[in-house]
Amino acid sequence: MQKDTLVVRENGEHRSTAPHVLPIYATSSFVFEDSSQGIDIFKNIESGHVYSRYANPTVDSVADKIALLEGYGSNLTPYAVMTSSGMAAISTLLMGVLKAGDKVLTQGDLYGGTTELLKSILGNFGVETVFTDLKDLAGTELMLRTEENIRMLYCETPSNPVLACYDIAALASLAHQYGALCAVDNTFATPLLQQPLVLGADFVIHSTTKYLNGHGNSIAGVVVGSDRALMRAGVWKAMKLAGTNCSPFEAWLTANGMKTLSLRMERHCSNAMKIATFLSEHPAVERVNYPGLPSHPDYELAARQMSGGFGGMLSFELKAGMEGAIRCMDSLGLCTLAPTLGDVDTLILHPASSSHLAVPREIRMENGITDGLIRVSVGIENPDDLIADLDQAIRK
Ligand SMILES: *Cc1c(COP(=O)(O)O)cnc(C)c1O
View 1 (cartoon, rainbow, N blue to C red):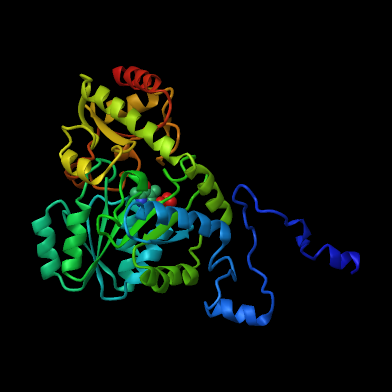
View 2 (cartoon, protein in one colour):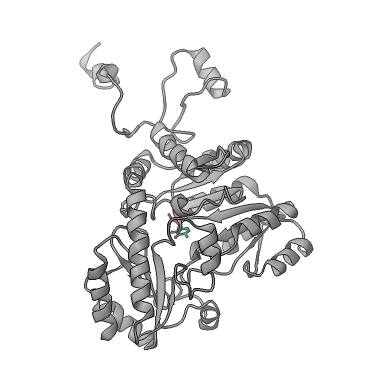
């Protein structure tokens, strides 16, 4: 071997005992021992990796862990596919199981990107979306009965930014009764607090960008399904062919972050409960939206379908309206103004002037997104520091 060949060759000899911590498989393809093994792997007779757009050991390791968490404690054996973002998880799921002529039945208060995807992209491919109030189970059933070709009921709970909760078990059962699939965006709750597949849903999606990673340093997503065959033939195939695969580096960051998920969620939940209680007693605050407060309209449902806590997201409305909300936001010292959520530090957002700026005011108001509403992704800092920061800012 000449030097100019040597520099090109993979030097595999350093591979010794198994690594303790998940390594990043930064490789686009995998080597076959001989051509017959290659054929068997391609035919799925032998398991093994081929090409990292199809599957990658680092990515698979994280997907398998999320599948275990979503099915935990049940007799389900879910299958998960990681994607390049939460939006990629949603688009891959829809591409993988829907076809032109199918309809999606969903709520009005979805994550903004999801609404836009349904309206302005899926519509072009002949998949129509029907928006309804999924809290109204009788109305939802009427829709399923009268609208033809509803193939998927898509729900997000708790929802953004007023933390409305929807009854997963009831919606999944209604969907199945009328031959539709049920998918749930479980990003806000995480599988530690809520397991939609166990409640009867067919699919769960996550933006792992948020709580699952928790450290705000990666963009990735996952689709988890209880029917392995449908996941392989629908979702995995769509991921492979649309190229919405997760990068091994992003998966690795997610794997690292997930190790502390349980500790973080405990603290997110207890901090959020303390802050929600403090805000609900504050004279300058009109209303607090937190499903863990008995005053929240969906408290009983949340207590029934979530376990271990009510999550780290809350929102509150200042009596001082738009101007007061902006003044409060600009007076915060500890809480960071950022348009994401689920990170270890406390993040704050004013929906009316940011995420919902494009939404007409009447529609915003109808959905509880008032001018004075502030959304908080409560972090894991000391709760007393957070309360002191919020208090001084609200007083301004
Ligand atoms: C952020 C988010 C998404 C989109 O995820 P990305 O990783 O940003 O693509 C979808 N659903 C919910 C509830 C989210 O918060």
